[in-house]
Image (cartoon, rainbow, N blue to C red; front, top):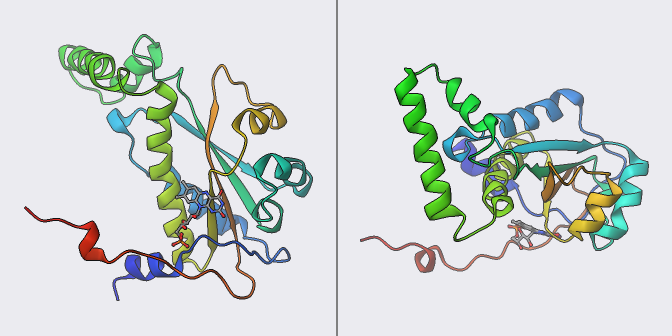
Length: 207
Ligand SMILES: Cc1cc2nc3c(=O)[nH]c(=O)nc-3n(C[C@H](O)[C@H](O)[C@H](O)COP(=O)(O)O)c2cc1C
């Protein structure tokens, strides 16, 4: 079987983690490398990954996450933060991001203009900068879960949390960062939930 498909078949939203099993630092670094290697629109990297290893912090956080046991029973929780202010077209960070490409000056200027016009005409009329950054965060989320699965590590993505409360508990500087999504990593314990999918033919259309 294709090894990526194999990993995707192993992955499920793990509801029951073994609280005794911890992920090694090496494996955790591999999971975070998958996040780092993930693509972002225009290469803006408007994200940050906050790793919660501490049992105490996760215990404090759990009530703000629908009291989900995954928060405390997993090995680590990664809080994926969006950085909406960073990707604002007026921010110097945007130009500096394009400068990294070491292109001729007029091409860099053209990129900055293209970005500005795309954000103003196509993105911001439809969604907030937070939503746009969060979309990118979810790509990293998926890659992290897949690489974790390829190493026999389970995960549970979590949108079941109170954003304002989580940000307050983690003392997030909300002028810079906002929580996009959480993901717990660890090792499954016992029987897990059934995989439910509508038939693939219902989901795909060729033209
Ligand atoms: C963005 C996102 C947020 C989710 N939030 C939660 C959550 O808060 N708690 C939970 O138990 N499962 C959560 N799930 C898991 C889904 O319920 C699960 O992925 C879906 O039912 C399909 O099951 P499977 O992942 O086991 O194939 C979330 C999934 C995604 C993609």
